[in-house]
Image 1: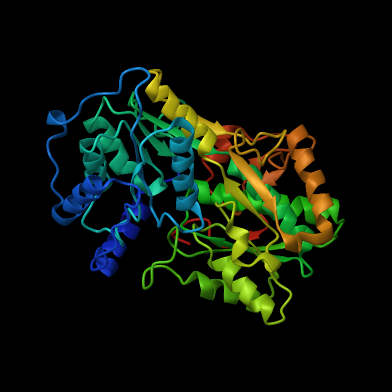
Image 2: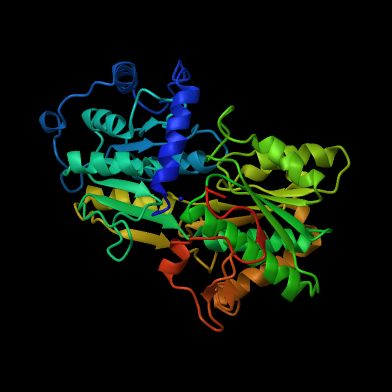
Length: 435
């Protein structure tokens, strides 16, 4: 979820959200896992935007061995069956494992749903309530969490998906209390692409993208590489797989601001795609494809982010690549408890001995009922990724404009994959927000 941010594009989106959705802050203040006092404090902050001087309220980090109070900011609803719910359930798992108090949670932290509260204000409020660590769980929280970390240097914080703690990265901030964690979802997306190619009857695969930045490009590219490998090398097809990307403009649907993902899915299917792979936070792709399948069409979908997303339309679901934030978050919270927290950038691979291990694997893939006989071939692809026998990020590969990305035999570095400037040659769709 990185130097993922393209600053200009984000500012434009934020301005649009504020202008179009400034009346939506309203009554929806979902802080279900706070105490009553916590909820009241959060509501007061949202209503006024006021916070106390953090220097007068911080008690500093907990002593070694003391219970840790978790604070968490979610960009979408905590029950979105996608990105935000995956983070939320990880926090609950950590609390259960360590016997902690319920996490302080504020969801829908975005300019459309909460135009009157900033990330920095929300962090101030959580610190006032006693948070010993704060997780900011969205790419577009970058500016706010950087400011909050600077304002509260004694409170450990995590910006999930970012690269502010990567010394060799492009956005190193040098904040000792702000770390980053991300799962190597590129593997999950390659598995998704392979599943799509193994099932497709038309060779036309569509990708429903959110906004355009380094992260979303590298994930879309990963789906394409997995699809291309399994279409050509596993199935032995002589024609190229058709792969179209369409971006809606944000992580989830905002009526009047983004493209309607349901309509985009309709357009994909109407234009011949029989598999839709989702890259957005929510479940419109699997829901709409499921509806069209129930009406008699041979179409399938692959949702994203959340292990249980196939439940939206099991008969049409080929599987779901999902994040398991629990192991990383557990280790981070334990480091806060024992006083060993360090600011570091962590990009966790799957546990290849069991990618669906709840206790060890950062990224998993649940095969869907609709995969059918292709399941065995997909297992072989996964085994090839695990052993290194299959290496889709190896050249020759070109960018969409024809320039060289990787020469013959060259394998991409972490930095080349993380900071992805374009889609790859062979993909249809925009590589930049300027088109």
